[in-house]
Amino acid sequence: MSNRLLEIRDLKMYFPIEEGMFKKTTNYVKAVNGLSLTVNKGETLAIVGESGCGKSTLARTIIGLQKPTSGEILFEGKNILEFNHQEMHQLRRDIQMVFQDPFTSLNPRMKVGDIIAAPLKAYKTTKNVKHRVLELMELVGLKPEYYNRLPHEFSGGQRQRIGIARAIALEPKLIICDEPVSALDVSIQAQVINLFKDLQKELNLTYLFISHDLSVVKHIADKVAVMYLGKIMEMSENETFFQEACHPYSNALLSAIPLPDPEKEKTRERIVLKGDLPSPANPPAGCVFHTRCPFAQDSCRENTPPLEKRGEEHFVSCYFPVEHKPAEKARSVVN
Amino acid sequence: MFKKKRNLLALGVLLLVTVATITASLWLVQSPTYIDSHQRLLGPSAKHWFGTDHFGRDIFSRVIVAARVSLFIGVVVAVISTIVGTVIGLLSGYYKKADFIVMRIIDGMLAFPALLLALALVAALGGNITNIIIALTFAFFPVVSRVVRSAVLQIRNIQYIEAAKTTGVSDPVILFQYILPNVLSPIIVQGTFIFAKAILAEAALSFLGVGVNPTTPTWGNMLQEAQVYITIAPWFSIFPGVAIVLTVLALNVLGDGLRDAFDPHAPAKRKKRTSMVSNGEQKIA
Image 1 (cartoon, one colour):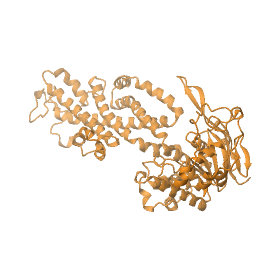
Image 2 (image 1 turned 135 degrees about the vertical axis):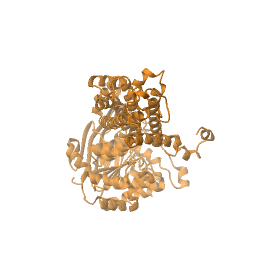
Image 3 (image 1 turned 120 degrees about the vertical axis):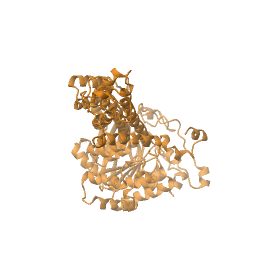
Image 4 (image 1 turned 180 degrees about the vertical axis):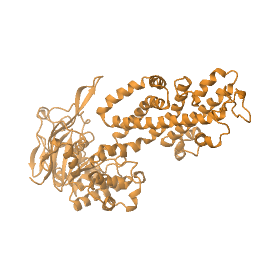
């Protein structure tokens, strides 16, 4: 398919645990453990999952901040892990990132204009850098008089806009958003998310949108992928996910969304998972979710369920997917 | 930081010494090398403010002129060892592979007391101003590189460095435009302290007889000459000593002031927070 922008095949990212005086590697933290997914041009793939499931590691690996242990990352059909330094430098133009924390992702000693100009100067794309920076600032809703100000003079939302302007400066094809709104107030979250949507339309961007907030995901995503312990549990289109999610873990996540209607909220059924996320250094055998799954059976403990196609663009990794459509609770979220 | 009297006073002392020694030839009544055998070892008087030495030379003139050599060595050593230390610290803090090897070498250099290292180097190279500067630089830059490295290690993992990397900014630009400005404050503070230490070390080397040529007046040389006469002409050793103490003290106070000014948690900025903290802390402040 020529429509594929990014394809990840069986990606593994292990971090060694070193112990003792000679830093002997005793074990590995399997942050990303055999993950595969595809992102098509122009769409937004949201990756959801709880803290510590490897979402950010995935983002950092795609953008090249870490070398993965094994696997393939295909960008426009080319495996970027085989790129040399020069090719990697060129690739960075096409993949940009918006970071989670707007307070640490901007250099406190650089002016806003210089922060946004940094990628332009690195690639010498334009002679009139200042003009382009002002253009970008307008695009993300920053006033031109902010050009000479320092980051500490801004609120979280405005800082995130600066970070977004920097990310779109080189007109990238893919933007990886690593929880871009989770550090912001709810009211500001909506503004920033709408900015993301507007920019996508205007600049034909593709997003890999990492989040743990399903309400945000529902608003922005075309497709949703659920991650658990470094693996994809379920992947489907947005609507399918919020109506017909059939992995027990997805259902548990969906049931945790609070409802705006207090009457319905009272009757909301919550699937509370027992226990904590198992240590990624020592993931459970078989299906990684079996330790907390209410439907786990012996076969789940022994074999790893493959990511199987269930419907159009709907993949599930489970032997016993929830057959019934999720009841009213999930649907009322959609409506 | 200059709202504090202490810092202002320190800066004043330093400026006074610097200006006095630079313009000395314009206003000094008696040449520091003028020998008058009839005026030997006289106490302080209106004519000789600090008295005279064993050759009848005016100690006041000599103290003022000696500052030139002392300050020159101090400034040059501070600047060179700060620059060398900063570059080494930046590189070893940023590149993990270089870090291990470089830091073991630095550890080795730090194992020698600074003054002993300088003493050995000067003894081997011979005592002149250039060699003293080289020796003192070798003695002091390891400390700077350690301080810079640890600051870089803290900064290196902050997201804006990663953000710069992902936007294609090259390593030299990251090092000098992103990391350096954010570690500048400890560098400046270290530089000030090294300035003070270098003056002290130069005086110590001269006093021990391995420093600047004895015919050049430096504070250390003067002390060395004066030690024989300490019982009969105490002013001979007191005035150069006081000059050293005042200059080094002023530099140290200035360094402390700079550190407070750069440190966001320093008491200097506590004013802003007093409304939020309990009364107990206000009393302490």
